[in-house]
Image (cartoon, rainbow, N blue to C red; front, side, top):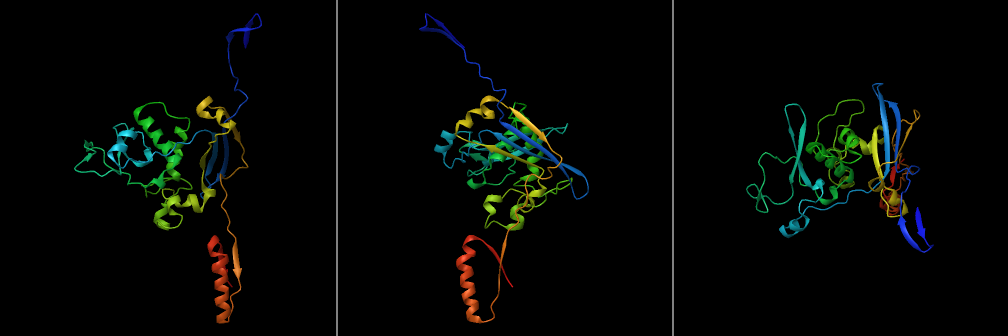
Length: 282
């Protein structure tokens, strides 16, 4: 809205954008029956928003002075202190910096904050875990958090928990950790912290959160910039968040002749093994 005097001088400019028709937050609800015939609600949440960035743990005192206490919560240890009314307070401490006699860079660590999370390498950073830990911090200090706090606090530990091997209760509960079943080689660095079924049985997942994090024009309409503009859809026909990927298998006729067998194995090594293709001899 512009007001002009003498068709030249601008005396007043007001800018009032209308975002009512813009949507940046999409929630899709469905349902399915679990193995025990209990109805399980499934939810997929997609938002245009900025993902937390990884700020690694400082390794030297000089780095610590620059970074301060702002490095990622994924690289800190977490401690829960339960009060009499079963409400918990969340506290963090440094986890990977060498500790001598209870000190970190000359600063004493409170003895009541016992280390629970192990020293995580940098590849352990998970932006959803970072949001989850921020939610715990906000909850423990009774401060305002993000738009995603409640759902992450309710669901995220069902999918990802680097420390717990406790069996969860309820339908479609996930039990094992990735490294307990698959060790630390292969895809383990990517999947460590996730419960095994997230990888092997994604059709059992009842919740997932995705961000569209972009530097394009779309980014100016992100949740963190203009607030939440939500569209919620319910559809009883939707019964899973992700379908399991069914891998193909190459069946190879196994030769009887020893020389032909060597040629066949040479072809398998050359063609299939480098691309990770599953194969079987018949």
